[in-house]
Image (cartoon, rainbow, N blue to C red):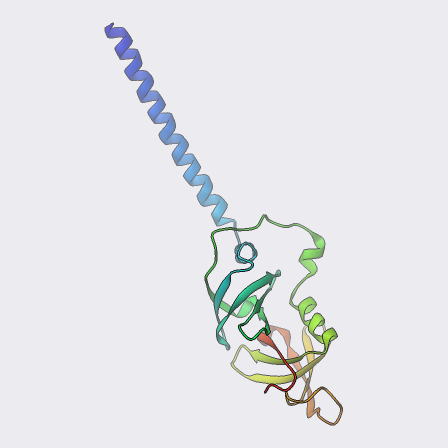
Length: 188
C-alpha cells in the first residue's frame, strides 16, 4: 500500500508539473500571438464601436468606427460626417474592443491605402475640410490624387465647387494629411 501511495503521489506531482508547463507555454504563446497583432487588425475587430482618437495636428477625433485600411481609419461622427484619418497621424485610440480580425494577405485589401480612400472622395466631389498634421485647415474639393499629393480646389464650404467659387488650387502632400472631414453643402 505504501508503494501505491508513493506512485500516486509521484503521478500527481508529474501531472501538476505538466499542467504548470502547459499554462506557461499557453501564456507564452498568447503573448507571442498578441505581439504579432497590429493596430489595423485591432481597429477592424472594433468596427461599429465608438472610438476616440488623438491625432497629431487634429487633436481629439471621435466617432463610430466604420472601417480601417492599411494606413487609414474611417469614422462617422455624431453629425453623420465621414472622417478619414491617416494612421500616421494617430497617437492613441480609446474604445477598442478585445476582438481582432485575422491577418489578411489579400492583394486587393492591401491596395486600399489612403490614396485609394482619397480617390473615393475626389470621385464623389464632396466638400471637405483637410486637417494637416501641423494643425492647418484647408477647405474645398479634392480634384485629383497623385502618387504623393492631392490637388485641393479651395473654396468656401457653403458653396459648391464652381469655377467662380474656387479661390485657388493647392497641392497637399498626402503625408501631411491628418484628417479629412466631409462637409455637407452649406456648412462652414
